[in-house]
Image 1: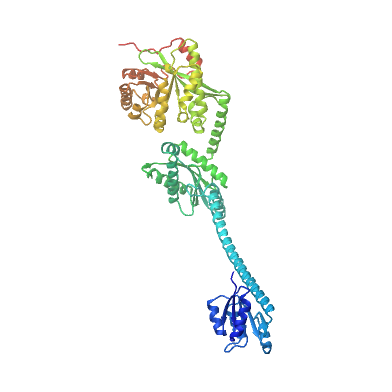
Image 2: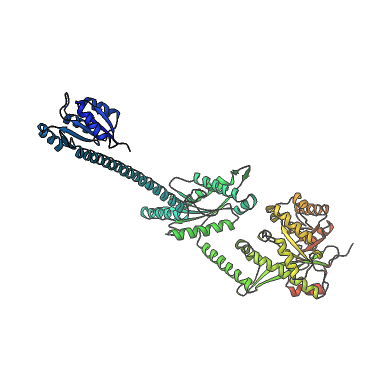
Length: 601
């Protein structure tokens, strides 16, 4: 770094002498003949050290250097003076106006050393100043970093708090925050001796939306539902997403129990009459709502939520799209359901399930042409349990998957047993559930079980019965699965035809072999003209498509005669036989039992 030295002296020879002496030390030397000129030079050039004569016209050296101190405090100031100026210079040193003084004449070596020290001092002061400036800048930066960090921490704390207390999909309070708010509202209600209500809400058949449209559409539907629920309640009430398609609302300041029902009905109407538009689709969604009232149905959060859930389950069992108030017996029902589920889980392990068989009879010959395998539960505690009491629970809990697989294996094993007993041409129909049909490589599972039991699928020994809703809710995947099984020789029938989404298009697309007329159309066949017309239409439709038609629930000779006259191919029902255990079914097959047909007139 270049060192600049300013020499100020009104005597030319003195200034020249100093310049000659100090130039050899490598300084850049500037010269001025007066204090005023020196200030002008400093305004243009930065000098580390200034040496000024004391006695100059217009402005003395001390006055000049005092001015330099004010303008350029880091510049080192040295004065040259005679002995007569000693007191003035000493006072200037004491005031800090000058760093050092030399007397005339000066010692060259001492002067050179002192000027060099002056530059060292000036550079040290400058470095100190730069260091202080850097420290100040660092402190300012650190202060800003601390501010930014505090702001970031505050933002992060807010984000964490939101993640902990709010549902990420719908932005509604989650279960944790809802419980906290419910506790606060209960405290307020206890203090004010007022009532409040808890509404437990479930979307009806939301799973079908996910299965049909996919989870992205399901998520958009949940967001739309959350927004609509929020728009139907007051600002003082709280709506929260508890789990999946379950929501809860805390309604404060309820005057009567009837008022809570009015809120629930308002919610039902808001959804039942107004579809939700998502992309290019309009989706109708309905609600099931359970209501519990403080203090009637509970005094704390846990009890109120439990009782609202019990009321919700009652609303779903009542057909959905309705609300139910909690009643004490509902908890007993829920307990019974839980107990039944526990027993069902053990039933498969303990081999308590059995198959009954109901014969299918040819309308013209009266001969048994096949059987339908029907699941029964032989419970040690309950006895023989009817399917309507436990199969819906198997579906709800997913137990239908292992149980359904057991049914197929047991039916195949029975078919093999009958073949070994010399009864070769028995066709066994096995019912399938939607959950079974959705299993990955379901076709491979079915064919594997047949192979384990030495059954050739091409012989039609095993027939699979499907429902219309199963096909329509899984149309694309169903086609592939059906085609794979059909290619191996498996035959299919549509069970309860006419009660679901009857459609000519799926009958054309899917490899169906037979239609089964639901017993609800057969029951009043002899007295109801509409049922008669429906049955005739189904038979005509089936035959036009080359399908066999089977009537279920035939109990009277009149029903049999009408169905036979209309061209129905087969029947099953109490007219010939109720569902019977394997031993009785074996007896019927071995003895060639037939339906006694009326004599031709």
